[in-house]
Image (cartoon, rainbow, N blue to C red; front, top):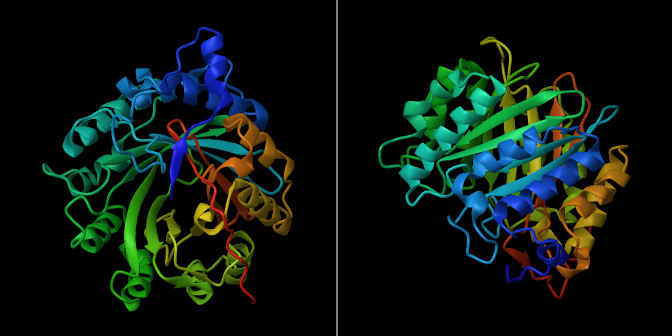
Length: 384
């Protein structure tokens, strides 16, 4: 994807007001506006302060300087990404994902800095890191490999305290042992039996078609804390969507297929891979995933963000969800025209979880450093 210089008008507005254009001021402003348009109250700016703390020394880095670390949280290496979830019959929530070790010089230092930031966050919000410590020896070797060590997300909700999530890299020992690392992690969490059916499904695919991307752990205040395994599906089609969505017995595979048709406008996904998040909660008697989220990288299947916005609105309408919040959220994050770039809406996802109605999430890039150039031609929808 071609990248061009970020044209945000907000930069000149900050300068005119005498405020420093730093990474921290940029993302704090975005989070503050997202909280206001979604009704998530942050009167004491505790969420914004926590975000700044997670960014560490990178928060004070001028936006005119290149990123301190090649973070893969975002295409332009901004170490922060936002998302807004629209549920059926409930208030929306805001999530911000960060790479807290993004100021380190090495991957091992990235992990150590990430842990330090996570401990500060746990002290600030009084939650336990014990679930993550169960698998610390698996995911934090002395000489880690891969693209990242530790990511952290805050989920901000309108009528309750925040929830926190940690994401670790199954490829920390290299790509070869990733499957065995995930197997051992699921056993330590007590989900070896529930994981077996998913493992068999992945093994049935061609080598390298399904790759383990992340393992996520819920921390803090959750009604049913989850362990989540993210699988990247390369060379995927709608039959594959149907099969993986069917691993969650309480879900509707055809709903996932329809989501892909509307959001992706194609029957086959040969660009950036789709991601499945298979979640597990409850006791060790769980027989399989208790939830499935399908993440579609919409930016790879549109010409610009105007098209991505229209796809997102169509997905929301198709699920019987309101669309007005989508435009308010886009305006909170960016002041550019959607047609002037691609990647502001990075992913769209459909969540199906036991005991809950479907939810749709739009993932929004901060674009602190770059905006992706719109493509001259938009992909045409394939016939069904």
